[in-house]
Image (cartoon, rainbow, N blue to C red):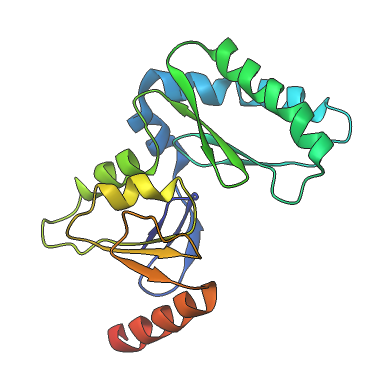
Amino acid sequence: MTNLQGTRKNATGEIRKARASSSRERGGREARHLFDCWPQVVRSLHSAPGFALFLEDRGLGLAVHYRGAPPRSVRLARPIVLDVAKTLGPHIHIVRGDKVWEILPHQIDGKGSAIRALLSQKPPSTLPIIVGDDVTDERAFAVLPRGLTVRVGKNLRTRARYLWRNPEEVNVFLQKLEAEIV
């Protein structure tokens, strides 16, 4: 099982950090440059008064989460994130999600390209299962016409095949799936 947020959980339930270096290599020169500049991103955002954001290394890109941050922190951080992306050059772009900005190499258009890259390494018979609750998950849903795609939440406009109301329904599904596999 792979989690696009940078961790992997294997069939025995062991959770470990994904090998970021291999992800960065797949992202090419732009991804390596982006990660070389990570300290600049951290310094710039931490210098903002009232900093209250969570920064995440996602392997193929960087994420700046602002869920729960005071509106003032978000207002101060937005131009910093845009400026950092601009400074990194034309091969970097920002994908806006639900309370997150993802700073990505241009060739990584978001979760859709990440899913394609992962599936290219799997047998054709692999059944991808994607569960998401964010606008950024829509690109992943779109590239999986034969996969099991589930949107969680109230958004009725989705590319996913199924809609679940809440995370509790996801937990029920995962428990049933685990029972069948084990």
